[in-house]
Length: 639
Image 1 (cartoon, rainbow, N blue to C red):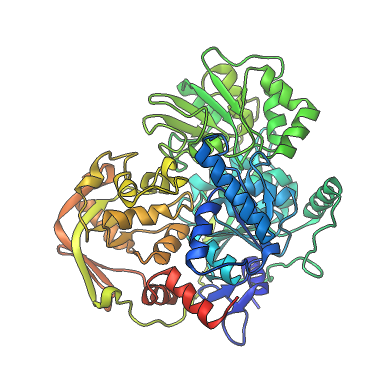
Image 2 (spheres, rainbow, N blue to C red):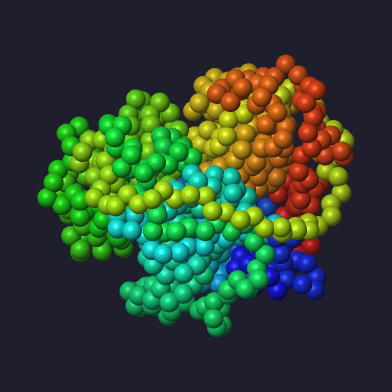
């Protein structure tokens, strides 16, 4: 049948899809997820749910709410918001975990809210984490979750899949974090907009914590979903969690967990020799630059802050690895080390093992179990001019504090060693031979549903000034900073003014209504915050054209009626003509014209085709965005 694991799991949850055959890459399907998680953004989702006319959750037992992002905020307004979220969840019969329980993705896994063979979505980009236990983890946005609450359904275009085949085992000192940091740098564009499956004989040597880290950070790699086949280790993990919780072992779907077919149709296959993965450090402020720590430490990079935090690397094995290095020592003078366990259960286990005490004894400052500095909220943020090294998953400029700071990513052991030294420092490990690119692209024909030409606003073309921001990987933090993400009262004007402030302060004031933004590759990578799309709309941007677009941003753009097109050839040619626009945005002298019927974009004399839009784009635009699309469905198919 040539099904990938992603397609096999999706097939179990299809409500509406192709007739007479299983779904495959390129198909537009309607899915009913087994679990849906939201966090602090539940407040905004509640508002959207009510605007849709929703009163009762379609499937309360499938909804999980975990308060985890802004938990250090003890203001009356935030506590009131938290109380309203809890009241809603309990009244609706949804599973609820209060602030301090842990980070939502860790809670989902350790509390057995998700199981192998299930499709689990979350209003957070790190939903890919669930792939570690044999599930299919898919990030969605707030509006999508409101629709799932109301109808039990959401739309998805089945993605192409990249298969990562592991061989061997990680050498001493190397971790899952080093593996995924290496993949992000070595294959920066190869997973963007695709799903990632990870298997091969080397998979058995990865611990569950390593798998969770790798699956978590496929989001940073640009993937739209992640799935790792369940195996004996998965079964042991589930049994241990069942025993700890006194709960039944989760079902594997009425039998063996799903598997990819032997002749599955993959877009590409990446081969990885785990023996050649060495401890790496990524940065500053990017995952595209990842260097073996044994090389980087020669630069003597002084640090101010170090972090043992996040849903990527704050589990028990992570804390114990850091504690082994810190035990009996004190962090360097002038260094601040912050620690927050991935969940309350993890902290209790670390306290029992002695790891927590060893870390605090070395001078670390404890933070409550939650996101905190990972998303730029609460204590311990980077100040202007400071340098940090973190075990978290993102180091985008301004992500963990000031946009005038620098941030590197590393494994917990390297973070601990660096905190002791006061500079980025490696650990006692064999460096190994460098990992090299080994990727094979396959000739997979994607047959998408036919669609009529997309004619937004009833016109065959759209024209305006071209705003050139041609750098790669403009992330959602650069489009909407963390301080506005959980401010439910943030005005459109505030959102608009904050666009690009992390790397081009004040430039947003130069943009006029009707301008078209032209950007580089992986535009909108990072957080699933839908305010990134809303901020561009508030600024007056009529369309986004990029070399490639991160999948969650593309979804958010379509859900809000913002046209988002991919035209890599155009961007490459504009970079040759406007190299200055890579460093800082600029307004081109030539206008831009998008001809929808001809699938062509023109900037001055430079013309290029753009990739056709999927059928869902037509449906969403015709309905005026996701709200109208859902209201039509709710009118025709009441929950």
